[in-house]
Image (cartoon, rainbow, N blue to C red; front, side, top):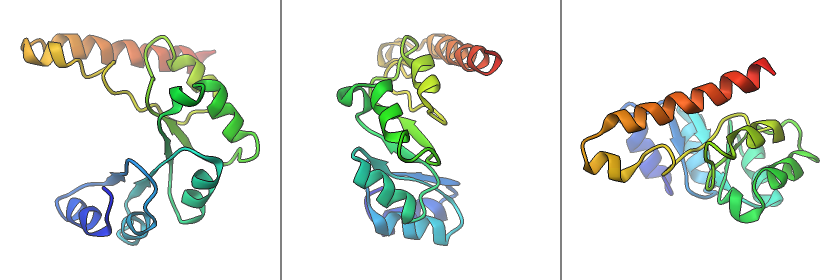
Length: 144
């Protein structure tokens, strides 16, 4: 969502949370006014803290891997340890645990989870197995 109108329409359709690709203060305002979870996208420290101060519940960091991955996330949290960050862009089974250790509150997983070839081939089992593998990463992290 990039406009308040889009966020409102999505919420009216039943959404419990709104994710934005980038920082749009009007989207945060519309989402929080509706008492729904707001997850705007941001990249820089200024954007991240601006999103938080505007009322975002979580901030999606994109493209996190292009900025250095887990070390970048950890660097963002150094001055802002209270933030709830969700890295996206480059989150894979190989990087998931490092993002969690760096302080991620959740993970935004795209093509590593939603395998387009598997969808085209009618093989939902591939996606289910990938999802189970991510759950195992979370379980290992929590038990560590």
